Structure formats: structure tokens, C-alpha cells
Amino acid sequence: MPSLSEAFREYPLHLNHNKLLDFNSLQELPDSYAWIQIDQEDHTITNPNFPSNSCHGDENVPIINLNDPNAPKLIGNACKTWGVFQVVNHGIPMSLFRDIQQTGQALFSCSTHQKLKAARTPDGVSGYGRARISSFFPKLMWSECFTIVESPLEHFIQLWPHEYNKHCDVVVQYEEAMKKLAQKLMWMVLTSLGISKEELKWAGPKGEFKWACSALHLNSYPSCPDPDRAMGLAPHTDSTLLTILYQNDVSGLQVLREGVGWVVVPPLPGGLVINMGDLFHILSNGSYPSVLHRVLVNRTRQRFSVAYLYGPPSNVHIRPHPKLIGPNRPALYRPVTWNEYLGTKAKYFNKALSSVQLCAT
Image 1 (cartoon, rainbow, N blue to C red):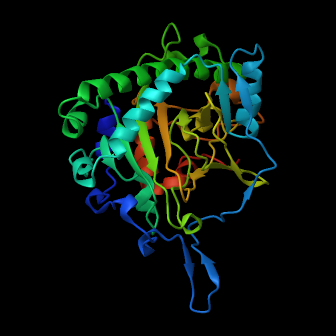
Image 2: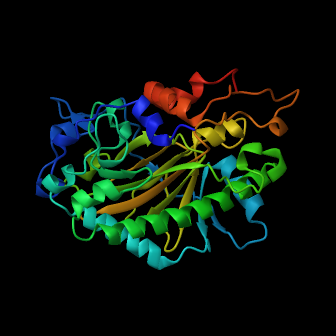
Image 3: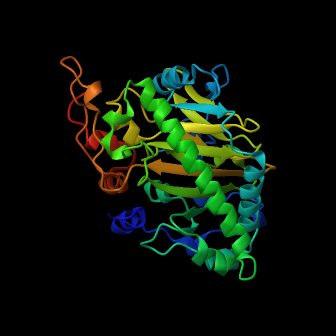
């Protein structure tokens, strides 16, 4: 079975990580990071590749208690109407969030020279560098990330020759906790669609998603001298089934709500943000849409987040589930593996879903 790393190597996005800036040393926003330009008559011109910064605070992303007996129904409604929700009472101890944040802070506080020792290779996915979506935009993003697929050992030895074991252990514990939560959430979402364990063969005989693939992104959004003209992470959808996001107490995440505009997803103590990805959009036959989201930056405070990207076994074909297809609801998407879809995403980016669509929704 091909691994997720092999899939990323097959569809490389060539990013020059060696030109990453030392963000903390900058007093002004470089032109290459300015997403809003000023013309000669002092009229503000928004980059056409970047939706407006306007945001609405009168809508709230659903918050769901996983101990609520109605949680599957509430999750289903959130997936259908928002594509994103927050969960509390998920069973993951706060100490683990503190530990992974300390590892992230230790990593991103290293010197640029030290971090580049663990830089991603041009055809790799694991390691330090820019977000993979950077190549699709003319301007750079005010952020840096560290991606982990499989083991972080090789890169962590480069960063911390004498204490890498401590940080490796934290990552292993965090990934194990996220995997268990992802399995639980998958069945709550599938239950809300009326899909049972017997009706999803690739989940395994016990429905444990034993061969599911995942990746971990540690993200840093340093304080920015001109946050109104900068972008932390540009608008995009995830290629995943679902993504589980931990964010520190610095706001910045926004989701696009149809008919409303950009809505803030505020940090919630002990909460986790769950968003639907493109593959679940396909599996649900468009019923549970993947959500467009972005991250803005802060003038005085660093934002930190950890995204757990969860998908199917890399060679399993994801298609609209038969229970969600009928005479009045034909299959809207062709079957696609995560490996294949990563290639489609690398080519078409936010138009990837349209490229695998069979007929108009």
C-alpha cells in the first residue's frame, strides 16, 4: 500500500524554504508579504486573489459537547450548514495541549539557521518550511510550519541533538490521541448520515479505520508589524476527510459562511475545531461541504496551532456512498483515492473538487 509520503513525493510543490524570513527581526512588512497594495492615487486595491478582510461576528460556529446523547445529530446539522464545528468534552487532557504547544514553541523559537537544518526537501512533505498552498498565490504568507508524516525523529535530531526524545514522545502521544478522536468523530459524522459500520467496508471489520492515513502540521503565525495588509494562511479547503485543529488563545481562524461572509472561529479553552475536508464532501455526495477557511495575523501576539489531517488509506477509492445516491440524487463525484486527489489538488488547488465532479450540483 503506498504511503502518504509517497503520494506527496509524487506530486511535489517546489517552495524555496531557504528564503524564509526571520519574522521577529522585521519592523516593516516586506512588499512580497503585502496582500493589499496602494496605487499612486492612494486608493486601496485588494489583491484579486484574496477575498475581502471584512468579517461578521453575528454568526457563531456550533459548539458541541461530545457527551451529549444528541451529539451525532448536532454534528450532522453543523456539517450540513457550516462544514465546521468545535467540540468540548472530547477526553483529551489539557496537559497534552500544553506539551505539544511547548514543543511547537521550542521549534519555532530556534534560529532560522537551525530550523533550516530540518527543512523539507523539494520532493518531501515532512519538515520545516512554508505551507504547501504557498505556490498558488503571488504573495507570501506571514507564517511558518512544520509538517510530520510518519516519524519526526530524523528532523528532531537536527533541531535538538540532545533532547529530541522528549519532543518525539510528545508528538507520538498527541498523534495517538488525535487518531482515537478522529475515529470517534468519523463514526459520529457517518451515523448522522445513516451509514453503519457494516456499510463502510474500508473502515475494517471493527470499524477502527486501522489503515487510515494522517499528517500533523505545527503552525506559527508570528506577530506582524502590519496585520491589516498581511495574510497568515490564504483561503483554502483541506483535502482530508476531516481536520482536527488545536489553536492557542490568539484568534485568527476564519471560515467562509455562505450568504454571510467570513466568520471568526474564536479560541475555546479545551476546545478543538473540526472541519470537513474535500474527501468527506465527496463521500457525502456534497451533503457535508468542505469549508473554505483562512488565518489572519496579530500585531502583538504569536498565534500557534496544530492541525491533524485525517484521511482514508491512501489507495482506497472514496466515492459518494450508495445510501446517499438515489433517483433524485445522482452521484456527483467520480471515485478518487487520496493519493490521486492530492495530485489533483496540486494541479487545480481550490478547483480540485470541480475537476472530479460528474454533474452540476
